[in-house]
Amino acid sequence: MSSWKDKRKIMQRYDLTADMYEERYAKEQKAKYGVALENVDVADGKVLDVGCGSGLFFSEVAVQAGLVVGVDVSSKLLLKAKKQAKCFGNVFVLQADADHLPFQVGFFNFVFSFTVLQNMPKPAETLDEFKRVTKLEGKVVVTGLKKAFSLNTFMDVLEGSGLKMVSFIDRESLNCYVAVLTK
Ligand SMILES: C[S@@+](CC[C@H](N)C(=O)[O-])C[C@H]1O[C@@H](n2cnc3c(N)ncnc32)[C@H](O)[C@@H]1O
Image (tube, rainbow, N blue to C red; front, side, top):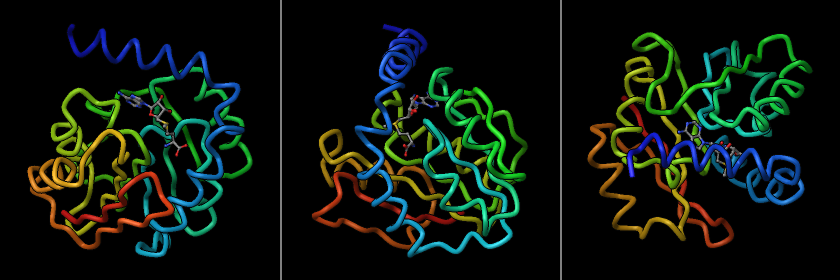
């Protein structure tokens, strides 16, 4: 199957489950945000949230960051993210594929992507795209779902990205690894 067909299937799956997303996943996602933000200070920076879903992460960063942009492929989840974005003056959302981000080289200080890489046909290429839109010395924070990636597989993906590891958190209470990388 082509990667576009795979991606369309994933998009449809998230569209179908959008109404129950937060009820099901908010608690576990927020725990990941907490760990990420213990390791990264987004003060005044430009933040990209790739695969932003319903926009749960926005309220965690909007106050400190200068600008927050959320992108996702699911239009149903994006509708929810848009509502969330309206609570802040510096948060914007748009529909885009993580492998083809509509931003210039080095535009963002911080790129976050929580529980998204398991959906991507070639996670190493996706990371390469995150790297492209990140400023030199900016940070890329990604999580790897443990049921989709063994520790070794996830490490291989990270190492293949050419990004430098700043910290790696493997907490038993989380269903994801959390990696902080720099360009
Ligand atoms: C498990 S959810 C995580 C959502 C959000 N990051 C959070 O913390 O709640 C995965 C998200 O990735 C999005 N996604 C899947 N494939 C994508 C792609 N190719 N480009 C952008 N977003 C994608 C889905 O629509 C969904 O919102």
